[in-house]
Length: 197
Image 1: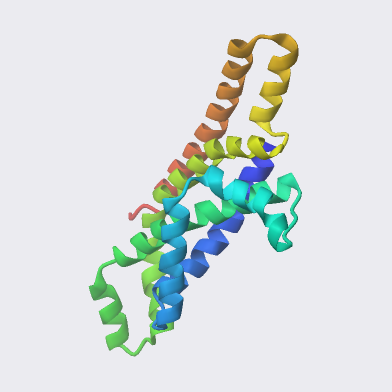
Image 2: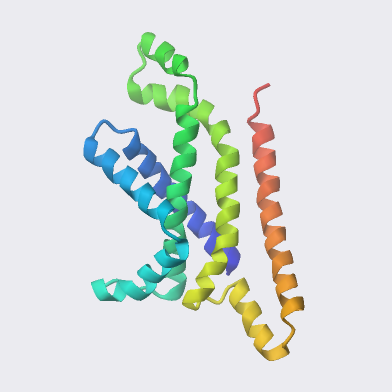
């Protein structure tokens, strides 16, 4: 359940991040303003509060979600803001001379972005996005507070019947470490693959 929530939230969060980055880099003031406001709100408030607002406050505005869906959406909305800044940071760190050279040989803005800027930015965003993914996996424990039966929630249930909190939470921590190191391994491999030769 923890893996399922984490993977879905990362994928959905990445989609949200791409939309936000497009808004931040847009020529339209409203799109820039909305994207900046979204990032500020979701990075400036605790993820736990966001989950509570979505799950417990949602029914007041007609949005009733089951715990699993609320957990995935809440985590995705939060991590999307962080991923957006990672992606935007990678894009703006690409040498501006590259874009200027592309424009000088007749590339349009879209062509320059897709064919010149993004391929170079992709390598720069691998590690920051990996850090975001690790943060989300660890943060997925928060969904236990809205009754999602994932790793932390399951550990708490075992503790109530075995009265061995140290052993059970130690095992839970070990499982989180395995998942985190799997992500780190994947990030290292991707970074090596896209490293300049």
